Image (cartoon, rainbow, N blue to C red; front, side):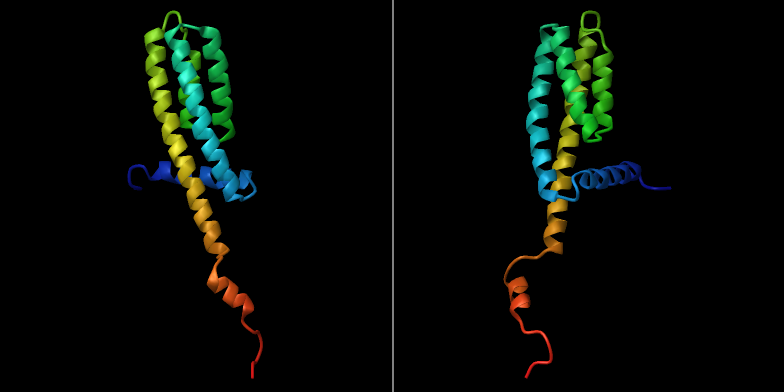
Length: 149
């Protein structure tokens, strides 16, 4: 039987490969997307928290819709499920539950953001290893090819 968490790691690796494929294998682009996600998701989460506090269902709906679009586009899985749970709650009658769901959503988004940044870093490292730049690479290009003297 696989160790606890192995299925989650396997799913994360598969999702990571899909994300990298989605950006044409461009690790730099994936890094930019990860940075943008972390920055923008934080803004939307703060706006969600504000909407819940002021019981503004319209603002909540707008922010959750935008955040879920981001999460789905990046195949976030658990974070999108948490967002869907929050979206399904009635802000007037379930304000306490909405605040709790928002806490869980913040945790899931933070975890996903960390995983996304890590994936981008790993992809950049792998890309660098495949395309070394520096003295060795330059020396290898400059070295004569053939039988020599």
